[in-house]
Image (cartoon, rainbow, N blue to C red):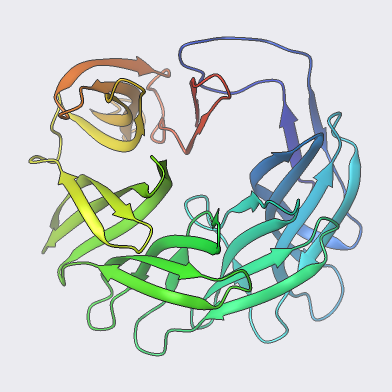
Length: 327
């Protein structure tokens, strides 16, 4: 299978629209099969793609796949990272790669058997600096989002499965420069799914972390957006959860982005009901503006709203502060 690398166009671009020459390139890797990309980062004039692949030779091990390209999409090098006793896995919502201050790469994945969280550090030539596994012998597995480098280590965040009922608890894990755990803190309610999905620095000593809270009651469930502020020690300083599952004109809020004036731009999704022809639920992506007290100001829809998965899978902030929605 050929992994595809795209440049020069995005599916949903709010606030600005630009078209620049780019490329759409498929790459064959003879030593790999079933290879695909899930995440991409830029480091200077190098494009780094991250995903899953399987070795083409016995014993056909599946691992995480890192490949580097120049700005024209030409291949530079690649590496398959495997565990001889396990299978690595990632998903579009968890398992990410980031560039570190030493021009290396920090990435997260999970081990399929036991679902231990895994943190891998690579150097600038894709050589392994360390592989750390965070084994959970009590609960049902841990999943980590994008690693964030801090002065004395890394901040890892995500969720894990509760041991008694399989529901999710949100977690923060602080590790040193070698990936050793300094502290781990969790938040959750026994019959709820609580998870962290996005984190970024706010002021000099605070973190903004977005997530969600989902309550299960038999066949009924509802999800509410969850927004937290933590200090560098992982202490929860403030949090906000919407009073209703669809607090603003039937819109379910997702990720939050702070603005310079204290207001917020948020991603949201609207359920448009069942498609009369195909029978699937239709969704439409929205941008929502909230004031500094989380009061609704406006919403703007994006997308054709004709498919069952018309929503953003990722949101990036451009260097000029604009937001780019990809879905």
